Amino acid sequence: MKGLNDKVAIVAGAAPGNIGGAAALRLAAEGMKVVVADYNQAAAGALADEIRSSGGTALPVAFDITDEGSVKHLIDVTTATYHRVDGLFNVAADLSPRAFGSDTDVTDVSVDVWRHTLDVNLTGYFYMIRHTLAIMISQGGGSIINTMSSSVWMGETNHVAYQSSKSGLIGLTRHTASLGGKHGVRTNLLSPGVILTKAALSATTEEWRAEILKGVRSPRLGFPEDIAGVVAFLFSDDALYINGQSLLVDGGANFT
Image (cartoon, rainbow, N blue to C red; front, side, top):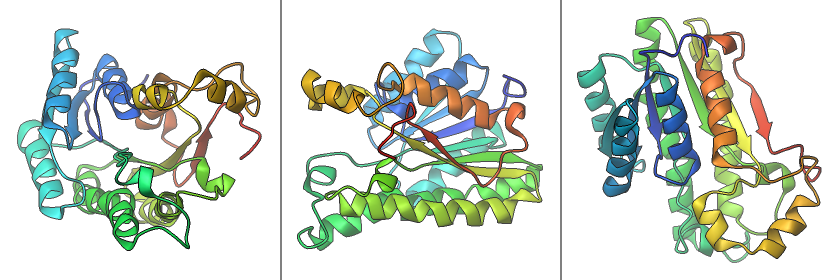
């Protein structure tokens, strides 16, 4: 894609087998220098090694998206190494049993799960943008992508904290698009549908996946690489006139 070679991208939430990991691999294949950022240091290192073994450029950085100081350190390391930030893909999420697995409904969810989920999915993205936007404005442009979820549009009866935190990204994205747009900084929102990440494959059955597929207009469910291709497009010069938009990438699911 046009305009990606030698540009610098941060993937905040990148580990092998997930959407962020697939995006990091795709961006590196397109010639970008990729900062592989994840809470799991070993996972970030393994993915960076995979990129470098394929001839790409990658820098692994362990960070905690809920800690503003840790986020600032990530941005500082990036600019100290590469002197710019051209793309930011916010895709971090805590899908662990203690967080997503304990995220019930509004009458039952614990306040701790509620607060933690908002800290990761909304406040954490706020921190990332807060410490990246000025850099992009000063260098004359850039592209920011936030990750929502098609579950927001479905209105599920559980995962209230997850849906609420992801809904908040609509306002954050539109605000950032307006603030940075005149300076050449585009901010958009991706809403993946059911994506068969490594974790999703291990947590679901073939029967469940077949049932979900009945509500999708495409012949299969999504893979992380499907999202990675859209990320590369939105970072590229082919998408210079796309700003402040919400893109459903769900195979045409008819329940959204």
